[in-house]
Image (cartoon, rainbow, N blue to C red; front, top):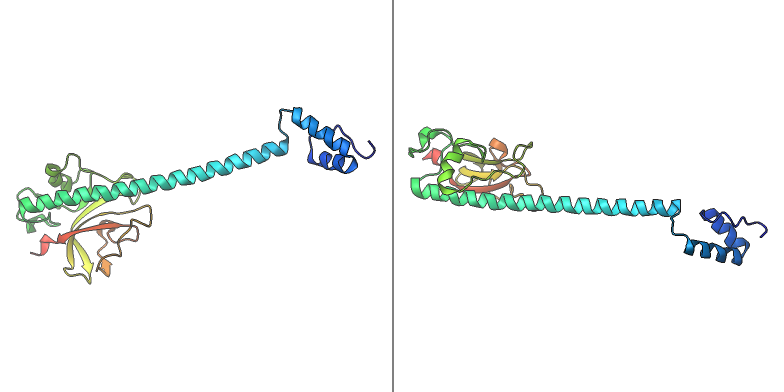
Length: 209
């Protein structure tokens, strides 16, 4: 057929050429495509692009789900720690102190301040009330930890010296709560009050009694 090379079926240019030149040529192309089980280069590239896009969407969705799950675990862990410290308070009449010489409890022999779940003195004080002292799911990575501070500054608060526990870094915005207290500014020890933190206020610091 004049103006059309009907053997060039596997390219889009050939298809357009044949379609314009002759309907019979086009029908021949469709017949060959129906019996050809392979893919053209264009079809393969489109398929790869679609698969890549879907894989990216799945990866992003899975990553967000993991971040939310870790933040949920952090909230649950801090609630367990809060309960354990409440039991400590009921038994000893005070929360652990930043300065051990300001507390009356004989079990506190060192400063209670420090990261939780990594073998510091606060873990020793918590062990009677917990099967396992929890630690941040990403403990060991930069900025991820649980922390106890028996003498945290809370500017503008009443009282303005608090016993607190907190997760230093929450991965999703929905969980961070550093700005939901009366404090106009936190003291900052251990990362307290940073814009990714989740704070749990236990009560007035025992260091000031």
